[in-house]
Image (tube, rainbow, N blue to C red; front, side):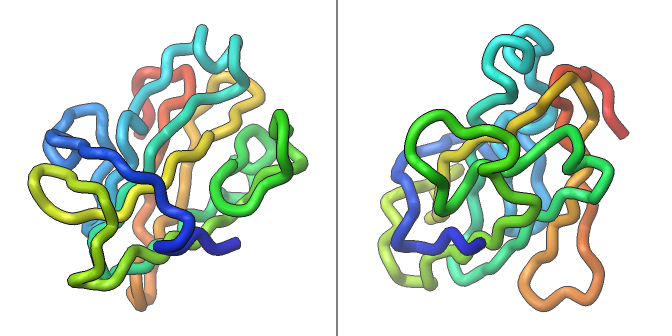
Length: 152
């Protein structure tokens, strides 16, 4: 599944790269990804979590097999209406707008491409993701705290 420049949303995130609740991995920022309150996970089955990528970069977020039993990525092409776990994805590739191409979004004064989506979670959990960035041979590991405050 690919989310590219044509499917982006537009907004400004003044402190996204510096905010303590953001997950930053090179050109990737997962805004408010470190912690979602357990009551939000219980009420909504997850949380809306913006993903930002710096211009000219490609990032694939992939749930581990174990994590996919509990969580799913609701970004990119999805059916209309309420999204359930079976409708969402185990992996999504985010292809940012090219350098010099207007994305309509900024983070800390710099151009970024922004996608709004939803991290589904069946229950509170630490949700590990692999972040495959550009052509790096090894993914970076990031962890979202879906109803769990301290995840390693």
